[in-house]
Image 1 (cartoon, protein in one colour):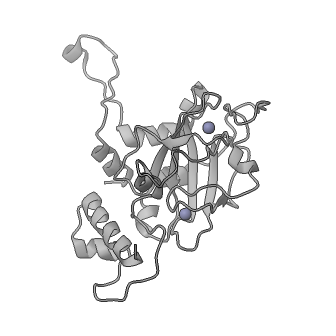
Image 2 (cartoon, rainbow, N blue to C red):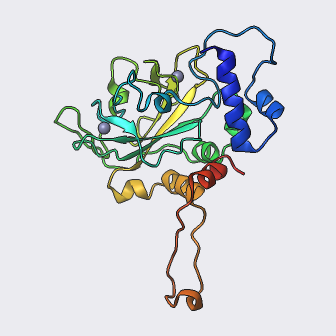
Image 3 (cartoon, rainbow, N blue to C red):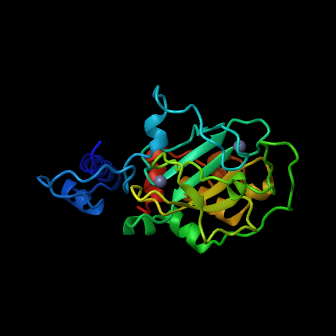
Length: 257
Ligand SMILES: [Zn+2]
Ligand SMILES: [Zn+2]
């Protein structure tokens, strides 16, 4: 695929997600005007479909990638992954010896200002990574629990970038090692727009992870504020109701619409 067709695809997806006109979307994703010579192949450009979604179900792609937490080849797209959100991917580790159940990978910087304006990116910018768990060590290989060092921090070779599919994902210089549930990564592939990408474990079975301020904020963005119906409408005072939002609602909230 040429870079130009990747840009066209990105522009169509951008138009749909942001409700802009096509020319506006073309400008937003940095597409060339029609008639330009095709640019060299790009592995991922802003708002093009992430590699892991393109290979899912295809005969050429791997069944699973290496889990960033446990190092086992058991990491797959999560059931809740929002397929129209091209700046964020949700993954799941299928290894019973790994506690990582819900892992988000959120592009923090890709050279486009729309990325900086995302509500989830702003949330992670404003809530710093910090230690949330007692330090744990795991004896068994290919395993991980909350508080243990994520495999990607100790790996001796780059990990997979889920956006471009290359083995070019390394720790970012800004990565905070004290935080064992959140890792900042960097894609070193020059044909991939992804620069920093934040990995955050959203669910690992521990209340501490569920109650992290960054995890709570990301959930609030996706689900909206909790609504408290009046006692008269339900007959149950104080009942807190959370509606399950559609993928389109989640995407709109993440983009800050
Ligand atoms: Zn794992
Ligand atoms: Zn990449």
